Image (cartoon, rainbow, N blue to C red; front, side, top):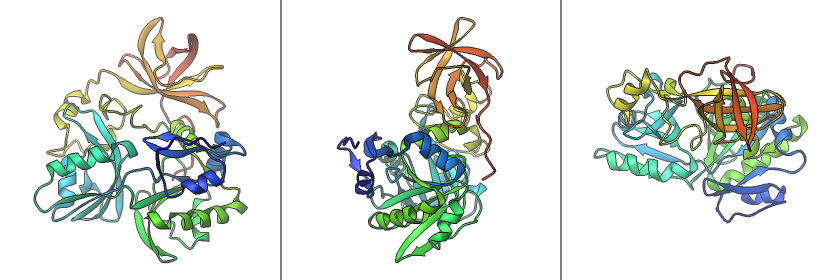
Length: 366
């Protein structure tokens, strides 16, 4: 059944409705949560075992261009663009003065004078505004949210699927190549949010339906499925990947969320640097994985205690289709350690869990 939320719509909205997708609001966009014929579990399994495709066109797009654009971005965002070469992408964070995460995003380094950014849907305007306010003369930031569509192709057969469309495959993880496909320019990047081998295709908004239709047709013999944001969430949670707004936020720093690896600690400048350096060795709380024992599905904001003493709360929680049990990410007090047993308050019922280090499952190297 399709439920319209009257939010902003991706260029593939009509395709989702025709497939009978359950639609819901996500970051102000009317997006597919799951499709009939198996729902989240079937879609999750397709990605883990075969291949699945996701419409993630709600994600933001912005270009920073002009002389020294890459150096400018490097002075603003946490990760160090000097670590990569043009043709590579990088996960990074836009922080506020207190070290909280305004957003996490992917930066595509096209050249020293051009960086393409993919922020989260709800945060695009804020990121663009912050960069615009800080930009030196000659550097411009262009919000292209509605100019480009993004389709994620994820799963062990993702290379085979793209090859069926004569699209390039096999390039290094976090690298991208440009391709001409049936008259439109596509950026094919070896990125994803599932832990599986995969790609993300960035192309013109108006050409998205042709790409989607070709992928759907080509993946049918492979047992591939269109996948909604419900499966995207279970897949990323199994990997322990942070979701902005839950595991990472203006109140939750990259250090607390365990994405300090995306901080260029040796850089002279980036937004929030002093606060993050001060917190680095002694965060007030830190993200851990929780593996539920027995029945119970933890959800965000569920309280967590150890030996009857409150020690934190769940930031993301779900049922793991792979493990067939509840899993969660939680911000816990620094004295809590991997291996500890804790209790999660799930709707007034105490559910036991073990503190673990994500990912919750093993996947083949991407």
